[in-house]
Every structure is written in C-alpha cells, then in structure tokens.
Length: 383
Length: 42
Image (cartoon, rainbow over all chains, first blue to last red):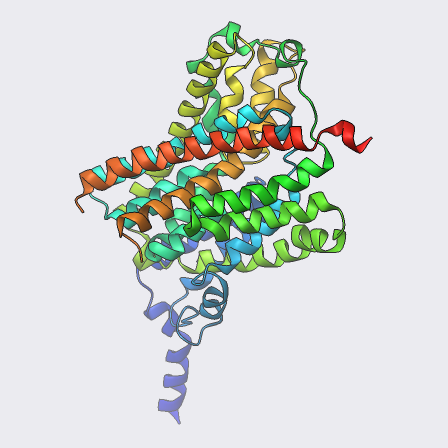
C-alpha cells in the first residue's frame, strides 16, 4: 500500500524529473511570444498559437508530437503535406486588391527587386556552411511571407521549420522598425519629397475584365515558367479571381475569414510544436534568425536602389521610397513608405503607389519561390 | 554540385528569372489593360 502511494506520488512529479534544461528556456520563449502577441499586438493571430504550441511541446512526457499526439496529427494534416500554407494563400488572394498594381504595371518590377534578399541570403548561408536545401529554406525568409517560407521549408528542410517560421513572422512584424533607417540612408531628401501624384497624372484604372483576366494570365503563364511553384501561385490567384469575379462572394468571404482563421490556428500551433527545446536551442537557430534579418535588410536595400534607378530612367517620376514596399509584408510595408514620405512632405500621399509595389511584392515573393523551386528541380537538387 | 556553383546559379538564374518574369508580367498587365479597356464597359 505504502509503496503504491509512493509510486503514485512519484508519477505526479515525473514531468519535473524528466525536464531537460532546454524545456524551461523554451517555455519562457513561448511565454515571450505570447507576451508579444497579447500585450504588444505583434502578429497576435500567429504568435499566440505559436507561443502556446511552443509551451505545450516542451512539457516533458506529454509527447504531443509523438505518433499519437494531437499536435502531430495537426502537423501531419497540413504542414508536412504543405496544405495549410496553400489554404492561407487562397485567403490572401481573396483579400488582396491588385488594382493599384494594374494601374501602374511597371512597379511590378519593384516587387521583383524586393525579392533579391532571398537569393543573396542563400549565397550567404552557403558561405557559412549550411547545406544547400537548408540555405534555400533560410533564404526564403527574405520573401517576407510566412506561408511561402513554411511551404518551402516544410518541404525541403522540415527540421528548420520552427526557426524559419518564427524568423519570417517576427521580422515581418518588425518591418516598421527595420526598414525606415535603410530607406533614409539610401535616399536623398529631394528623392523622398517626390510627389508621385503630381508627376504621374496619366495612370488609368483597370477595368473589371482586366482584373479578372489578371489572375488567370498570371497562373497560366507563371505556371508554365515555374511549374514547381504552381500550388503557391495558383492558390493566391484563385483567391483573387474569386474576389474580382464577384460571383462567389460566399466563397471569397469564407476564404478570407473562416478558412483563413481556422487554418491560421492550426498553422500556428503546429509551428509552435516544432520548437522542441532540445532541437530548437542550437547555434544554428541563432544563425537562422540573423540571416533572416539580413535577408529582409537586403530586400529593402535592393528595392530602394532599384526604385532609384527607375526614378532616373523615368526622369524623376518614381519616389525611391516606394521601392521598400516591394516586399510581401502587406500592407505594413506600404504604410511605412507612406509615413516616411510624409515625414519630408506632409502633402505627399504615396500610399496607393506603395500599395501597388506591395501587392507586386506579394505576387513577386510567390513567383520568386516558384522560380527558385523550378531552378532547383532543373539542377536536379530536388526530385 | 558544389556550393559555389549552386549559390551563383541560384543568384543569377533565380534573381534574373524573377526579374525577367515579373518584367514580363508588367508588360502582360499593360496588354490586358489594352484588351479590356475601361471605356468598353461603359
């Protein structure tokens, strides 16, 4: 009897007895992510489930990521087969208005320049000794696009999923802090003061038919160019086609609300579940966080420099600040540009131009990932 | 494939391919606007 009681009591303390030093550290990290989400309003939709998932997976003996664990079930349901990021993309497509981009198509190039950080960071990660597919997963943080980063990483470097996802979403939310100093450093006061509304009066809005044809054309041609990335491209464009067609309002609303919300919950908690302290707390994770930061800085640098070039080529009609919006962090990057523009000229309303570049960055990040996957396939790196 | 070759291929083909594709999309969007002008709907 006494032995049974002692055994029973020892069972209650087994969790503490089996605790690895990394578990309490990760529980604190999880709490910090919750703090950022709840108290600081930093990407709460993601950081709350990620933080909670990180806490759950670091409680010893619960084995929630074991074969029978519920976190493993959610992970297998939508992360290991890349379904969740694709469902999120349908919602993103349904929420995105490509109208400002269609008004001024040449700013699509800024969306391309804003992806340069991806490829430069791949080179940097390789230089520091990361294996090739790991370097690709690290580089894709530079897409500044959570679902794209998750899609590529879960497919080709699943062991890095936690670090890459946390880096991607954290830096996305830090865009208003990271970008302004770079934008100021690379532009002159005169350039920052360019009023694009005053010097560009010839932009024509796109018709409804053009808006409907846009997602179709991009899917078909983009898919032909980079078939490996067609799932990414097709889902965002499907969402946009539903939005622009206007005939499936219920599906559009479901994609941008119910489906996106449910999937975001599952996605977040699954990502958190990959943050098992024993695997997560490594010098490699710190390096990934550092490379992610560099990737987003490089995106901003390339975007602003390319916009400066466009400004010269168009005879002063492009405010170089909008180059910083050529990333996928939507609409945050566009708001940063608007704010910076108004710091130097209160009457300067760059928002719509920046939104155009920002939606270009959103499509650009997907296209860059698609091209990257097709190049990898072409080189025989992936099957 | 060695890392040097892989890295430079990704930078040149990946970055170049992205620029070229989005540049093409920009032209395509201009064409779409011409095929489906706003006036037509009025």
